[in-house]
Image 1: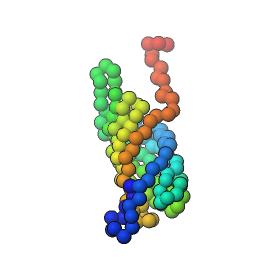
Image 2: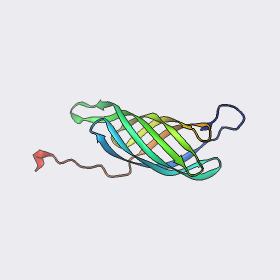
Image 3: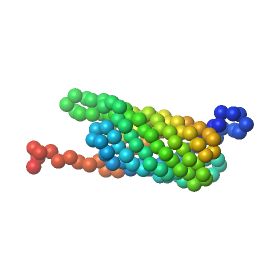
Image 4: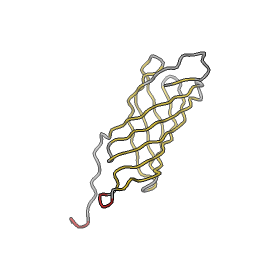
Length: 136
């Protein structure tokens, strides 16, 4: 949902499909990457892209099985093809390195509005296999 909280314009509902790619900047704590994709906003299909960082707050461990998920914060600075300029972030829970759910808030400082989003994401890339020293 996007709103300016003033009541002189209707709140708009948005949807989109965004792809992200991250690399580890600080092992176990910080990832940095990029976001790009398409959104439906203001009754138009548009593009949205920009940088993003993720900061891990907590691991959910399952004993000998390792981590089953984590809690992390995201921060991003996004640019849209219709002059949107968003800065914001959110809080997310990841499970099994496959599924993530969360909520985000962004301020569009160019168009004077706020964007509130619910996030559901699914990993579509392959998970890197680690070499076990015992198996060499």
